[in-house]
Length: 347
Image (cartoon, rainbow, N blue to C red; front, side, top):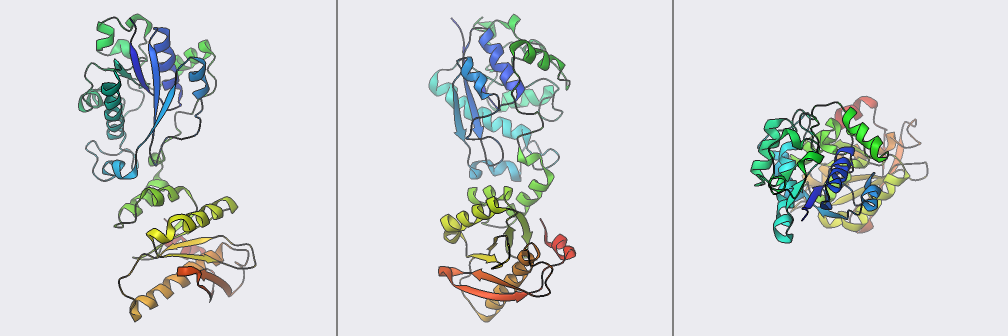
């Protein structure tokens, strides 16, 4: 009798090697790929083709922003160099995998983690914390470092041959690359790629969004990868497209859901080549004179930025068109923003 194992799969080399090692033991393996707003993909991953060759199916499980959000605010085990709460993220994934294990009769959960490979999340203490807090004592198999770790239940029951597993340790990649060469694995994601939360600039934009009550949703978080982001002092945010693809993405966002969630204002220089700017103007229960004046100030601010990135940036005065509720169209004439001003507002 062989083990039935659910393997967390990222597309990286370590998870591929873990999959192949498990197949070498005769285990029945299914891969699970978690998708959050910050990592994972609905598209075919690098290396995923090998799983098909080895007879390993892949299922994808989405984690919503609302479910992930506590890890961005007060993660019990802290952040890495940006907003990456790596230990707590792995605990979340392991807990979700455990639900499937219990519901569908898997014998173990496996991962491509390597003892000592990542200083925050793969030291011995962290590996133990992840296993314990996910409630997976004896059920979490790490094939690449298994011989350096306590035996799991599937090893004790001889459902998995421990002698076929590995004792890899540390940050060097030579053992993994040697295994990849042996098995002809050449297509895989790089170790540094993947999670947006490890990128300081992205984390800065996300942190700004989290600080604004009600602004952070699955949809607005999804836009953090699109365009240049600016914040009006103490107020609304502006996103400016960097190319035609991003312009189209912003227009689609505004058309599909923008006005449902926000008082969305679109800004563009008509005629010369221009980016699309979207202002997240928010909502107001009343439109007194002060609020109207503030909207006008915000519009002039946004128009100046959009003008700066248009083909009319060298002009002293630029006519910028904006569209408000129900498609109303108006024109404002502004001076393009300076580079110094942009840096003061840029996220």
